[in-house]
Amino acid sequence: MVGESVRPGRLIVFSAPSGAGKSSLKDALMSRFSNLKYSVSATTRLPRPGELDGIHYFFKTPEQFHDMIEHGELVEYNEVHGNFYGTPKEPIDRALAAGHSVILDLDVYGKVNFDRVYPDAVGILIKPPSLKVLEERLRTRSSDPEEAIALRLKNAAQELEFAESRGKYEYTVENDVFKATLQELTDILGREMGVEPDLRRA
Figure (cartoon, rainbow, N blue to C red):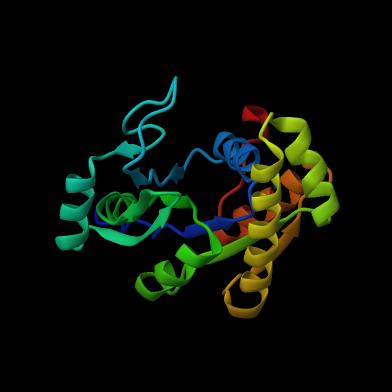
C-alpha cells in the first residue's frame, strides 16, 4: 500500500558460553524466519579456511579496526586472545530501517555495551543444562588441549554468573534437547517479531 510505513524490526541478541550450541540454534532460526538478518561482526583475526569476508566476519587490519573505533562505527568492541572483535552499527541501522529484524551473537560483556546504544534489544541467554554437560560437549566436539578446555569452562562459569547478576536478558533458555530448544526459541522470536515462522524451511 502506498504510504504505508515499514514495520520496525527487532533486535535479538544471543549470548551463550562456548559449546552451548548457540551457533547451531541461530542458523536453524535463520532458516525459519526469512525476515531475520544476521549481524556480521568485524575482527582483526585472520580468516580460517572456508571463511569469507562479509559473510562470516568483516576481516580488518588492526589499523582499519582502530579507524572504525575512532569514527564511532562500532556499537561495541572487545579484545579476545589478542584479536579485536566488534559490532558495526551501520548495517544494523540499515536493516532495521528496511523493516528487518536482526539477530546478533554477543558475549555477556559485549551485551552490556550494546544495550547502552540499543536499550530495546531483546536479550536471550542460552545456557547448557550444567557445566558438566558443557564439559562433555566441549570434549566431544573438538580436539582442544586440556588447558584450552579448562579455560573455556572457567570462562563459561564466569560468563553465566555475570549474565545472571548484571546482564539484561528477557529470556533464559536451557539448551538440553536441541529440537525442543529450537521450538522454544522459534516461539519467542515469533512473538517478539510479530511474524509466523516458515517451518517448511527448517
